[in-house]
Length: 526
Image (cartoon, rainbow, N blue to C red; front, top):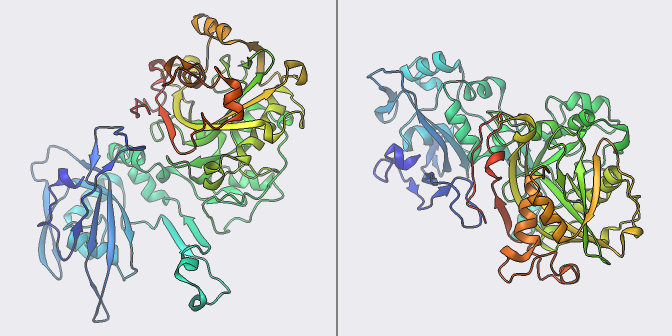
């Protein structure tokens, strides 16, 4: 944290400049979500000599997290010798985790800019040999290497078209290769050690992708489940193939047959779409890992979901389901018609890109909805067509399943949820044959009946459904007093209630805070 560390323009060597910009922790939609603020970005513009020739070099540094390690040692400083600039003093037991984005590719650019401009060494830098700082951290966290890792690359893809023939706009829009390399085991273990736990937890709140395993758009993660997936999947890729961030061209891997899988099977084999706070697909992970609430990922991994609300036009009733007692997450709760996840590698592509969100088509989420309605409620394929679904907006929420598994629950949800409405002329026009491992009961209800159910303390509800229903579906909390369910005809036939730009965010009720990572509120609700 630059401001906490006392960095000022005078402290920065060379031509470095500090951009007057603050980075908010999880800040979105112009809302201050936490009180902690980061100085933002320091841009170091400091030429570097290559073979005696001075060349321009520029690096952006973003402050992810900082900590002071206190072991009651009064001497908390050391001195290293910079071969060019003489002695530089720094704090031995003060540690900052930086995200570095070089704009040029000069030899040792990041190391030189950190050392010269920010007046600090990188842990393990051999230029300082067996210095006090290297000895200190090697003993404390067992890291006997340079504390620098190339985590993400975004490179132009080689093209058969000569670069000289491209306009600048064509070059900018050209194909690109985006790669994530996982943190190597020694660096990952060091960052997750007891000594650095607070640093790591703060860093992954700012940049959750640090916890991700590498991803291949053709075969899923190169993680703990990859070999098993490849063995069970004739379309899997060879181990060692290049890994890339997911895009919307999701190649089918294997036909998904829900009726042949147990709850545990789906936890291991379903491949969630991991997304950024802005709902960009950045990778994949198993359903199990995505829903685990642990100290290292207190709210699981943010992933994409959809919620279906199916109505009988003739009676204005909503179809509810009671999740089966055999469900691993949130069993025995009443909720909307269907809640589930679009998956990577499906027979019908379920990955939506930004364009489909902007135009409201979201055919991927709708395809996932049709698949799961057939699986959970037995609605035959073809009875509900993609064009019958209306995409309204997205909501970002999380909740620990503390009601089922206690305050230290290892399970929970953390989703950007696509709200999908659909109608049928009457309930007789739809076939319902619920899967016993998915649904214990179902019920068509009016608004008044739903509110009575909400008031019945003996009934459990999914936390996201109760909030969505009270806040947006029934108009008491709406600006004009009209909710999505209040005027169903208007909701389905106009775009008056559609909002494809904003992602609404809310924390769970207090009883769903906590979990295995002891997670607290993160949002000022929007």
